[in-house]
Length: 79
Image (cartoon, rainbow, N blue to C red; front, side, top):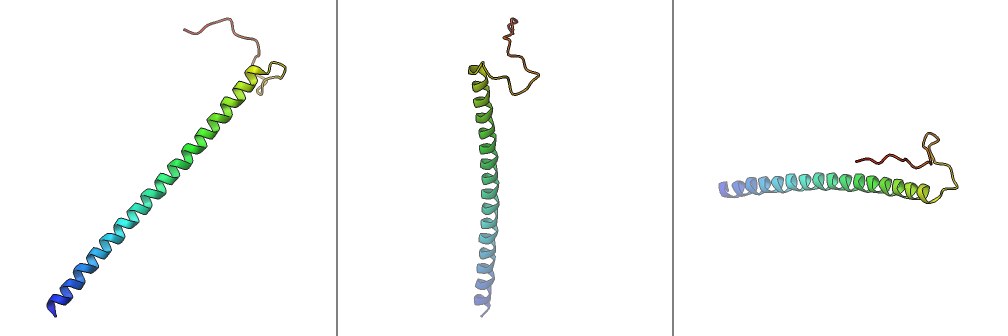
């Protein structure tokens, strides 16, 4: 009997370790998912900004989205 109860305690500890490990894997997966989500949002924002900039560059008949921006090309070149 002593050996049987010892085996039950040991298997219970192993089960707890597996549960703990599974919980950690789940938390890691959630963090990865959140990172992917944030990356997708940032990528989409960058694509929208690039598309707006390209449209503004090629569409000279429209005024810029921001009235404080000038459509006159700058004569200064940055170095």
